[in-house]
Amino acid sequence: MDIVILSGYDEFAYAQQGLRYGVADYLLKPVREEQVYEILTKTACKLEAARKAKEQRGFWLQECKKAAEQIAEHVWLLNEEEAIRAWIEFMRRLEIAKPGAGTIRNAADDLIALLQGELQLRGDEESAEMDPVPSAAEDDLLELVKNGLIDIMNRIRQSRNWGLYHPVRKALAFIHDRLSDPELSMQQAAAETGMSISYFSRSFKEEMGISFTEYVIRRRMEHAKELLLEAGSKTYEIAWAVGYMDYPHFAKSFKKWYGLSPTEYKKRMTGF
Image 1 (cartoon, one colour):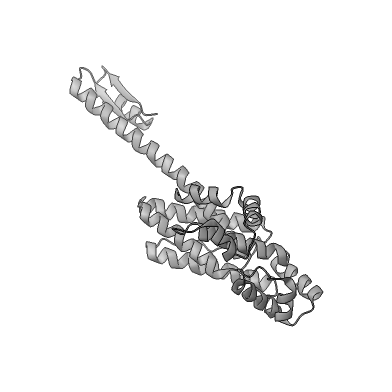
Image 2: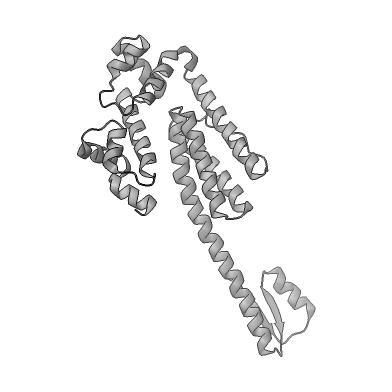
């Protein structure tokens, strides 16, 4: 709330005291009508600008939260390419929206803080720490955070003794290349790595924190979500592209994962 004082006292000390208390302006009687109009107009514009800034801040906080959840999932699963792509896409959205340099920097800081929180919730407090990002131009900021994400993923690999589990890395590449194959199975992945099914299953869960089946479903749902944002994409074709020959089964899995059917998600995100 902004306050304008209208007073008959011309003591400068009164005006000073009012300004110290944060009043917007101090008018001395008698006042002209145009003076009152000018002050009220200026105050109204100031209040409207503050309202819009608060609204914009709230909107970008929600966007930051969604982006942080998505990036954290990619980072936790060590999907480096997808994590970096999601970060770049978030920054490009900011750039297109043109919210101002201050908002871009604030949004980046918010995203980093939320991302660290998301990773800590997944149980890796130490690896989630990211060095403070210094003041930088937008292009430099993009690169600095990208490098920070890579550092976090490297620490997660080290904490999981990743170098000792090269077969799991090989299995992830195998899964990535065959997401569209409805016959993709743990038996195939185990055979690809030269491990027995039981040993592969234990090793995979130990390193990734989730089972092979859950990982495959997550990757398929994430890829489906990306494909749904593409212009002209058809939901039944996306089901095939992520390894589901039975569309109702795909739609049921997608809704269980995201709370919306593929059609509902596409409409909400693209308007079509």
